[in-house]
Length: 107
Image 1: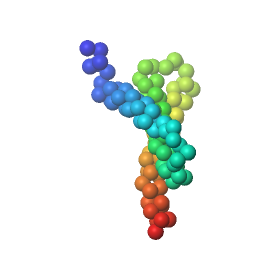
Image 2 (image 1 turned 30 degrees about the horizontal axis):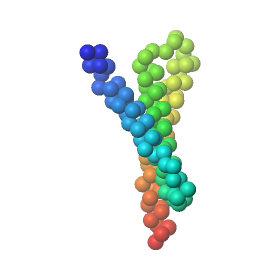
Image 3 (image 1 turned 90 degrees about the horizontal axis):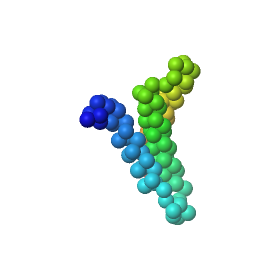
């Protein structure tokens, strides 16, 4: 019954971390030489999105487990969490913009 005491947000972070690992494993492509430049940049954006979100999940987990009394450690984890959250948002925003720019170049 210990899992029930974790809370919904913590369970969501754990499952999200696992989903990021699975997403990164799915993006490993051994045939990367067959990709053109546009597909390769899109794949890099997906990898960056999963990586930054995984870092955010780790930082949230570190905040929950309780760090030593040092304020510098806690502040650096908080700053890392905020930066990784914003970088994830930026990568997610860049994916449709990248596709839109590719369509405009083709036309």
